[in-house]
Image 1 (tube, rainbow, N blue to C red):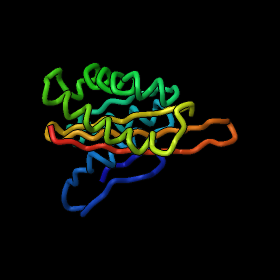
Image 2: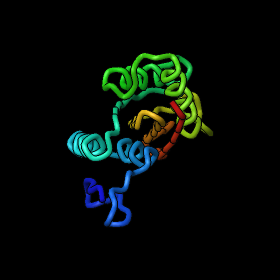
Image 3: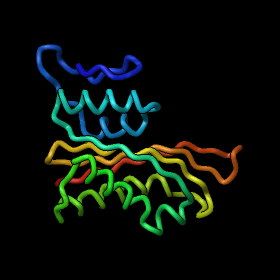
Image 4: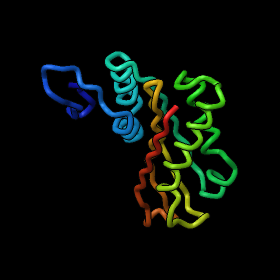
Amino acid sequence: MLLLEGGHTLKGPSTEKVKPSLERSAILLALSETREEEDKLKKSLMESHNFRCGVTELGGTVANLQHTGKLTNSVMSTAFNTGVIPKEDRKIHALIHATLEASNSIFIHTNSNASFALKIGIVTDSDWLAVAIYGRSSLHPLLEHARVGLGVMHL
């Protein structure tokens, strides 16, 4: 059983060590609300399951996040700088596709002028890679919407 901040657990049969899913781990990182909670989760995932993790945050409009490559570049930089993946063409390709898959759920049905505040969790076990994006979007402060996206690729 993996104890997470706030009393949440990832559990299975008590007689065996259960490996949490990469997808759930990436989503939990993206949903973490404090740096302390994020650090505890990353440490736990690394020590218990040898998952490599990275987290980044960024904001902007759809036009400046998606069309300029700011989102993809931020995810790639985080993945390289935290050791989630090495700078190898196949792994970069998988990371880009997982990021695009996750961003499809974030940017769907929105205006290009909408503002976004996003947190991104990246997790790998060396065979698979998961990218989760959680954030809020709005055209006006009174019209804020929560959004979440997930992308998974084989390395």
